[in-house]
Image (tube, rainbow, N blue to C red; front, side, top):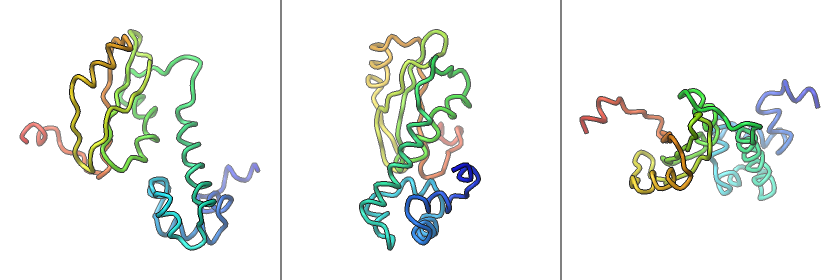
Length: 164
């Protein structure tokens, strides 16, 4: 088992699905992020992947996602953009549409909760201020951080956003 720490992605995926299937999956999806985003149906389109292997693959990615969010003895300190990104990167990487989240913080900038507020399309998201601030009030948050992803991979320049 110690050798797994040095295994490449194909070798690790082979433990779940067998080497030919692992190679076919990585060839089709190109990498772990696209593979994690794949639906059950998309996974089962690969020769050798049935419901059981598709469930095992999806389960492995969900376990990794949950591991990244495990509870700490003290709530995480979110006082820099890097710390926010480190906390939510893996969860947001899997979204295929724009998703807005809010992190509620106490007076020491420690996390109270993260809430998914809404989902949009590939490049658009609409949200009411009422939805954003009512959660902060009910959780008695001293601060909040709005977080959203860019599944299209395009991050508009702030000046262009103001011009639109």
